Structure formats: C-alpha cells, structure tokens
Length: 394
Image 1: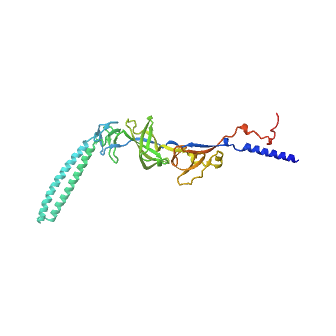
Image 2: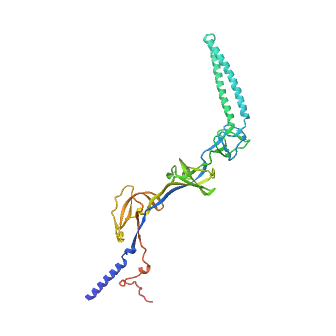
Image 3: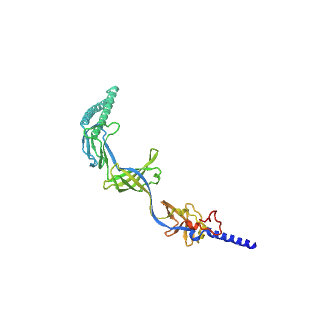
C-alpha cells in the first residue's frame, strides 16, 4: 500500500514538471527588443488653400465730369506710360462753360476795379469830412461786394478749367490695360460715383495671389514663408512665391471663417493672368537634416523582468525635467534613460533638438513572438487526462 502511494506521488510530480516545462515562456522564442538608430530627415509642414491671381498694383481710371466719350486711344492689352493720353471727352460744352466763366471773371474784375477806386476816393473825402457817413458806408459796401464777386468768379474759373482738364484722360501709371469699360460715343455720368473707363495693371511680371486660409490654419502662417502654387491653365507648372501679408480682417461665408493671405510671385513669362484660380501650398515649417526618432520611442516604458530574459539590464530612471521627455538608449547590454527635447513631428517621426546624437541606438518597444504552430500547441503530456471521447478508435 505504501509502495502504491509512493508511485502515485512520483507520477504527480512528473506530471507537474512536464506541465511547467510545456507552459513556461522560452527565452529565445518569447520576446525581442525593437531598436532603431537616430536618423536625419527633412521636415516639411504645410497649409493648403485656394486663391485668385491678381496684379500687385491695379488702378481703375475714371472721369469726374459727365459727357460723351469722344476718342479712345488704347484698347485691351495695350502697354501705356504714365501721363500718356488714353481717352478724350467731348469738350464743346466744357469749352463753352470756360468762355462764360472767363467773361464773368472779366466783368467782376472791372466792377471790382471801379469800386476800389470809388472807395479810395470816398475814403479820402470822408477823412476830410467832405462826405457824409452814409456816402462812405455805401462806397465801402459796394467795394466789399465787388471784391467777393471777383473772388467767386476766380474760383469758378479754376473749377471750369479743372473740369476741362478732366476731359483729357491720361494714364496715372506705367502698365498694361486689362479692362476697357466704354466705347466711343458712349455717354458717362459722373454723379455720386466716378464711372470706370479703364483698369490698368502696373507690372504683370510681378503678380500676387490672394488666398483664403481657414481659421484653423491661419495661426501657422507668417510673413516670409515659402509658397508653391499651381493654376489649372498650366497643370504641369509649379509657381513659387512667398507670403507678403497676413490680413487681420476675417471673412465669414456659410459659417466658415477665413483670412486673406497675400502671396507675391514673379511672372517673367507672363503665364499668370489676372483672375486665375491658384491652388496654394504654404510651407509653414521646413527643416533639413533634422535629427529624428520614431514617435513611439517617446512612449516606450521598459519592463525589467522581460528585459532580464533578454539578458539586458535596466539603469535607474532619470529625474524628470519640465519640457523634456524620456527615451531609452541601448548601451551594450544595458538600457539607459536619456532626457530629450522634442521639436516638430513629421508622420511617425519626431525631431529631437537636444539630448541625442547621431549613431545613438534607441529602444522602441518590446515585441512578442507569434504563437507556436498549431501542431505543437495540441501536443499533450501523457500524464494529462484525455478529454471525453478523445481516445475513441475509428
């Protein structure tokens, strides 16, 4: 009986040992440490928007007098110089007004000269007490009245001459005529608003794009940033420019808030035409040769027990510092902590601005091996009980 108990006990011990050997994790097939060296990358963050191509300087030329367009001297796309005659209004009415003003001025001047002499003579007699106060007052009144009429006639003369000058329309700047809104013989009325006759662009070799940037992206945009854009007219060409101005006025349309960003671009081949729609990419961040590591390395927390199975030791964690994050570098058979300062992120990589050097090997994570093959998983110890029906013979 005693011998039977010993055999049973031995069988149980052997079964337990077999079960432990079967279920324990293997050192070589359980876990591996994933590492990677630091790398140098180019980081580019950008904002996209759409805008309209416009001339940098654009002047609308109009007229301040009403009348008939008598002659037009320029047409679309004509190159003009500052001061060049580009149109003339009918001057018959304005010339008649000028002659009338000249006659009125001459009349007022004659009256003023006569009253001046009369007042001087009356004043001299009045000082000698040879005329009455009433006569002196009348002479003074007529003199002041004639002087006011003469001043008024002079002002009217200046106005008529200026209006006659407005009938001759010249270009205010050097440029190209991009719009003509009138025809010869057409009547224009300069009432509350000056009618536009021509639109002249200063220099089409220098253009600008006014892009609408979403409020979520405007905080990243700053003056001087590099810009690339395309237009549908030339889909294979990429045009370049830079941010010239970020305007503060917001525009709201369909509950979408945007801000205007002015982008300057050179146009030496004159491909860019006013009014084209531009698809804009603003590079808000550009860094070449930046030191970077995988972003998940910043989240790696080592496990001393698992590393022990890989015959790796773990150095004590570093004391935390504000604004810095911890990564683990592989130094021989030891993982050592290193506090780093992070910069910009690009995809699954993060820039390291301080704390690491080229050639450092970084621990990224612990990777578990895949499960054993199904055949090995179904092997059983001869000491384990067989499930019901498992030993049925066919």
